[in-house]
Image (cartoon, rainbow, N blue to C red; front, side, top):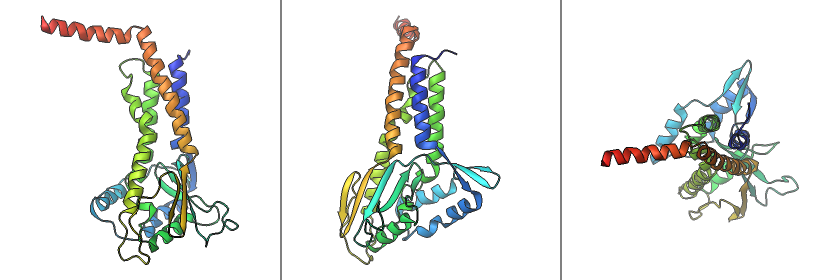
Length: 272
């Protein structure tokens, strides 16, 4: 089967998109279910308002996993963003990368090899009144993989169906890196502006920095994109090329012109 140029661009973009958001991980089934059951232990404070409502909705949605014998296959993807925390009590000699947390399409995860840096950062945040990172975007933590799978399948339909599916199916995949930035920015802002007033150390409300170096008291954070976000932007380029190339292909085949002429004919008939 001969592939058109737009299909080649699209397949490259879809493959990169799959690796960035859906690359599977294999876990021991019992250990993974234990991990899910214990995730709520990290909730330091009670949630409030619409966040509590969305948290309840999120926990009603089952996580996307495929049981295989004593294992489960979970579409986890690659880390999209990295949060690295430095403090005097965590010297670089003992913590070469600092306290590292990776942000995936379905929430934060520990990035350290020999300890739970996510739990450690949540403990530190507890003293200034910030809630656990694990509650950020509670619905996306459950539906993120489902959305990624839906967008990946939409890309395949866009690539292999030549008629009537020109641009609508690529809107979400193209917008994915920017939607992630908006959602991630919102939840970091929410965490920084919903501090517990009874915390051990009083700090003013703040918005954690999205990119670069931020500082609160003696703690500094280094936030930057990870490999997954770089791959998302690369897929954005190839999907854009696929869209433009498919549009050109349909024009050459007369499909777009025929659609426009049909619309013009119908308008003229109505006016007559």
